[in-house]
Image (cartoon, rainbow, N blue to C red; front, side):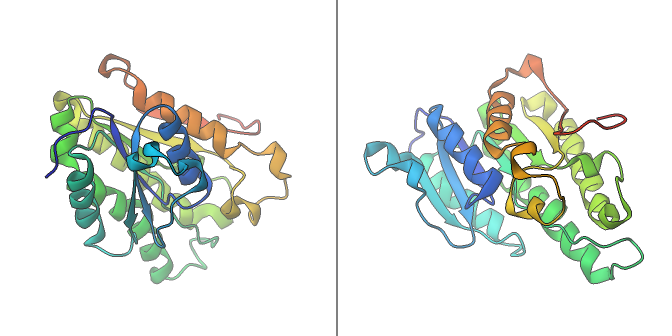
Length: 239
């Protein structure tokens, strides 16, 4: 393992586009080193080409590969010597009711939205605890807080579980300085949301704004723990 670098290090899954890309860019801008989990690793334009790009690490990552998280953490530790935060952003949505969905549909969403983030937290647990201020962000959804429509019902099952995962991680690591937050947005202006709502993209929560919120959450001290953070672009009964 290499010596620890001075910068805090964050691992971000699903970092090639959308929310993940914006979170990585914002953390990098704020002085973090970032390790980007991508199916097809490619250096993002925001990393530049100077010395600062040395603090951007690319990792081949597929959330369906049950060994990918351990390999990723090992590679990041070899590169930076530390892991201070994980942002579990990779996710899938299959828009089916609980009656239309097959077991394979439910299994697919649980595999990516719940099991993979749990494996990532488990793989990074030792360095997160060693940090004393380890941070875990689970990108859940407002669909993890309520079932808004029949078509989102199957997805909601996985996101309710993702919120529970965040709370479980928070319980497991609190005494070791690990803080976990379930970030629960409504519609975000990404490719995933584009086919799910008729609202124009400019009226949806912007990925850059969500990235600023996540950067704030991982920067808070242990004494300002936030268990859940709900974000919405429209008025709802509760959110």
